Length: 68
Image (cartoon, rainbow, N blue to C red; front, side, top):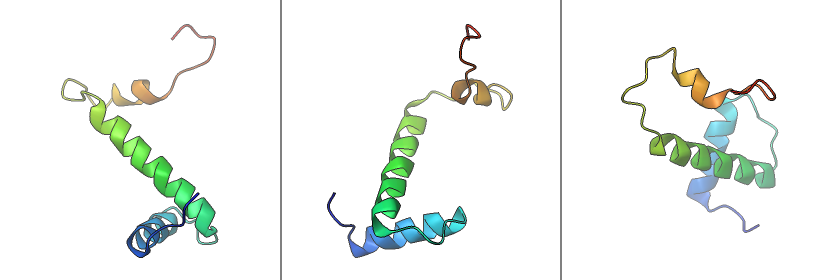
């Protein structure tokens, strides 16, 4: 993995601090930043205009073996 640029490192540190993850290595911060960006990309691809607040968790949580 390539190392983070200064701006990306700052963004990753701020994200880690908001999550209470103050002791992450640079490699772990890079993984966190990639995961956050991937989650944002997937979230923006969802059409949430017709969802109510009660519907949104159903997009994220699925019970294995429950046929949902």
